[in-house]
Length: 297
Image (cartoon, rainbow, N blue to C red; front, side, top):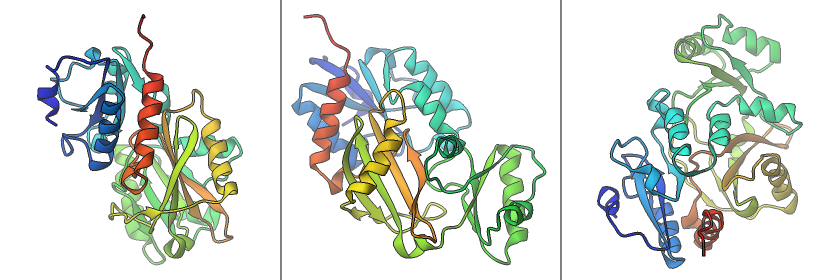
């Protein structure tokens, strides 16, 4: 589907946009399953490049943020876009949720709320804190260093034993541009990988697992059947949010003790793996349809 050409089409019962990036002008294959499911429900949904100056965002009844997978390279343009679109139409997830999730200090908020989160040290931009002092304070022999605002493993680095000088240089480079996070490297994830539980409209939908991916390495996901306690642990995290997000992906990593810890709570542009759970595309379409503004009858 050509997103630019689609803007002139006569609208059916409802018309919405899936915000995407220039690398995926027609939306990724996963989201096209949802676009088709929405069409079956009488909703015209078209992909639209989030930072294109030609998109009339206010003409859509809803904008769903989906594959905006280049925002981390464009400074503060994305949060400004979020605020602008939220002032023109209905945006999901909502702007306050996106702003909160945009900076990964949200992990510290969740830890303070009592959830089991991968231990996280935030280092503020311009700080003179050293990586060695953080490792020594926490007793972490290996760490992961990454920007506090980022996605897809961009500028993420694992700093192993004997690499402290390289790690210090990497942290210093991050701190010249913004805040950074330092976390222990969870070596158990090398064996057990990551687990991601997808929630649509606050309800568990499906789960996948994939090998640990660092520094933007490609993930090779496969379907996964979580236990009831796993689903409940993730559900409590999603239920803590207000309002209930349209979509959420809860990512867990294994600790050395065997506990699964929250690694990420993805509320902006997570891959939702509909190709591995095709029936979930219809569930997402139903969730979107249910949140469309009501029209006068």
